[in-house]
Length: 138
Image 1 (cartoon, rainbow, N blue to C red):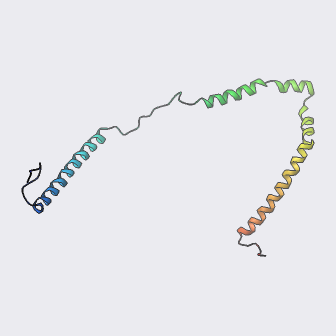
Image 2 (cartoon, one colour):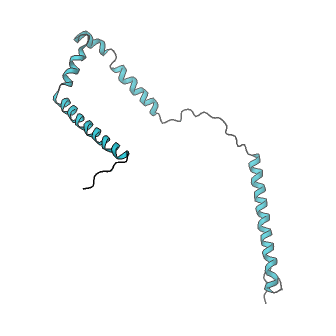
């Protein structure tokens, strides 16, 4: 019989409980050491977040949007006064009236009116169902 490192000359029944007990003790010792190291690391670490301000990390979209707004309004600055001098104080009233009475606008208004009436009908039907009524079965 060959001698293997860590084995004994006893029978298998004699060796088994001793080896298992020794392995369990070894695993528990390693786990206890690892837990102690983890606790030591956590206790020495600084867990409070330090207040930091992040400057200049944006994508620039906010500034681009603001620049666009300023560009738009500054481009047409003073145009209202020029139009009032040229066309009169309420020059836009006739223009808006003409636009409102145009054929595409009246067609769109009629279409929206029909859609709103259909939505009102649907709302009434759904409200009836919500109150517990059922549709008649045919």
